[in-house]
Each structure stands twice: as structure tokens, then as C-alpha cells.
Image (cartoon, rainbow, N blue to C red; front, side, top):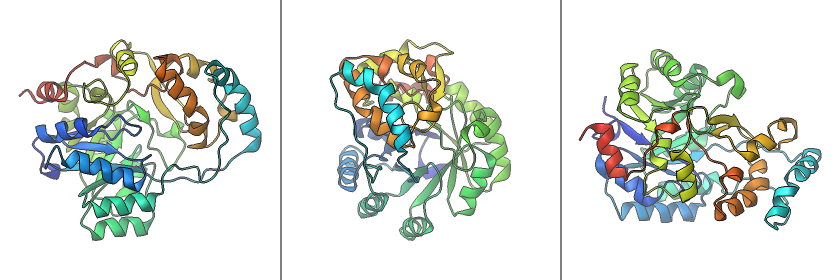
Length: 341
């Protein structure tokens, strides 16, 4: 099955936070893959601006990804404890203490959905669960193809039952935030090559394999296990067109095979990234971490200041378990290596 009428079964993962620039997305789609906009933190107006910028560069299809909002509660006791943990880093960069206030999500999902519909986007994916039925119905009524993200067979079945068209099977190898939503993330850490065939056998909708896929070998393995396509994130982060800082790219290019861990210290939600000073310093602080995305709002200014100083020891360096295979390439060069063309 050829998904989305694309030439190659390669989807560039929708990494929120600025990595997925219009240049990156359009180059992937132009070459015959599917580019993806990580729009979770963008307002409706910013989403429209990004869509317009992508369409100015390509007439090929692309995906827009959103997070499913979660209930976040501000625990004042945990906030005081975390303030003490973060105080040395705030002082290091002469930063004011963040004061989180509701609503905690930086963007309203209904505004995001309206922007997507207004711009006639044909493919939308969701991470962190299943959106409310009225959102699903609204997008389906517009003919939008819906993609859900699952980390277990149970989640994949729930996504299919909710009316989604396609499911991403996100293995524990994957970089960035875990898409887990039905159980604890510890109970949902299934490797890509174990998860994909189980999901393929359980659902009747197409399956996209994600996690630890960096080259032609990974693509071939995923397709052999029954996946209809692969979703690759880390492989695209070191492309010239990716919107992450140069020090982040260099860290990926220099990483070793055992460099990554799954941690909640940066955002309050488990995510795979490269170990550094910050992850080690807060390694035993799980009982003090605030809910996602509140924890992220507390560490945001520290991460931004560290990025300006090219200090990767205090940045969230999201990466999959195969990050050591990263190469410094243009999108075109990477796609040629992945497709053999």
C-alpha cells in the first residue's frame, strides 16, 4: 500500500519546538517522502504562517502534528521543591524564577484545528492520545486523513476504534516524547521491532513504524515486519535544513551508542534524549517533577539560555537510540541515501 500518494514510504517525524522548518518539510515532500510540521506549540495564526511558508516551497502533501491536551494540575508543594532544584541554573544565567499560570498549554487545540481546516491541510497526526470525538468528526468531515500514535497494541486498537485512518507504532527506541496514553510509560516500553509486527497483526488500518530507524537497513526491516511506511526523526535533525541549534546537531553527530535515556526532568513527560549534566542532577527527582507541560515552563528559560551559550549540558537533546548513526547531510542527500537514488 502506498500511503498519501508519496513515492517513498518515508515520513519525516513531526518534531515540535522549531526543528521542522518549512525548508526541511518541503524538501522531504519534494523528494517523494512526507514532510511533517510539529505544530503542537504553535498558535493558530503561527500554524497558518507555517503552512503558507511550506506551500510557497512545495505543492506536495505534508502532515501537521498536534498534541492531545492533558489535564495538568499545579502542585504548589512540588513547585517549591522544584524551584530549589532549579535555582542554581536560574542564577547561572541571571534568570527570573518562572511563575506558571493556567492555562498551561501554550496553544488552544480548537484554534489549531480551525487553522488547519482553514488552510485545507489533508493529513493531520496526533500524539499523546486520542482527541475528543468532536475534533475527530470535524476533521473527518473535511476529508482529513488522521494519524494516531501508539506505543502498545492496546493503544493502537483504541486509535483504530476511534476512527483514525493510520497508526504510528512508536517503539521505545524513538527519540523525543513518548506517545503513551493508556498505561504508565514504564509498562509501554516496547522496542520498535517487537511492537510493529504485533500492531500490524492486531489492526486493519495501515501501520507506520517509528523508533531507531536511521538508514536503508532500518527501513527494510520495518517494511519486512509489515509496516506500510517508516517515520524518522533523529535522522533528519542533523540535516542542514533542520531548525535546531548547531551545538545540538554537533552533539548528535558525536554521540555514542549508549548515550540516551528516557527522562521526565525537562518537561514532566517521559522523553528520550542524550544524558547530560541536567538529567544527572535531577535523576532522582521524579517525585518533585510537575505535570507536563508545567515542568517544561519551569525549565524553558534555562534551556533557552543554555542554547545561546551552546551549552548542551543544560539543553534537552532529544534523540533516538540509534543517534550514533547520524550524518551531516542535506535533506536531498539523506533521501538519496535512504532510497538508493
